Image (cartoon, rainbow, N blue to C red):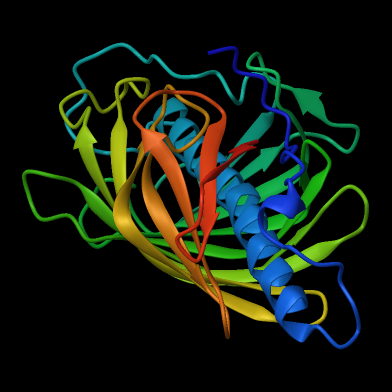
Length: 281
């Protein structure tokens, strides 16, 4: 896969989903389009959430805040190679981690442009059961998309696998063209690979379950439920497996991330119809 991390969602062939021209007296079509657009917005949201997760993991590894027995050399994505990281206080918890990508922004080696700051409050080492990490954003952009809100990680580990609950509150994403949407939800994240190499991130693989919602600028909300467990490899920029169902008043959309191949493709189908391919960020 050529990992071009551009936050562009492919234009849908609306004709595949609708058979008549939109009119003011056809609210069903409008409702259907909202549900379709919500699925596209969720794809961008998921990309940004997983990117934030990668940033958090790398920052804690590089500053010896991951926890656990360390036996290997640091090996990360170098997502933060162009960022300035400040940790206070130097000893003891809680700690505040400030990750500053600058006002002009900087591009990481994998081609992602970020600007602004991420601020994380960490109650204890990230991999210690019971620890809490709270992330907020200060004028923070990824590839021109502004991200706001709070993400809270709670370590729910029951050995031998590590796990977290990830809660998003007051989430808001503003696209480069000014269009925005709100999002919230609770996901359960379980690490299924890489548990034995705490300072090597590229072999980490996570499974994700849970629910979320997307609300557009007009106040229309669609719920999203993970039907088949999602899988996210740190080595892959996008989710590569699993399905999510989006429910509207009259229509449902199923997004399918595929069979595990690392690429930018997913499909969506409306009311069980023929799947249409879209491009992920």
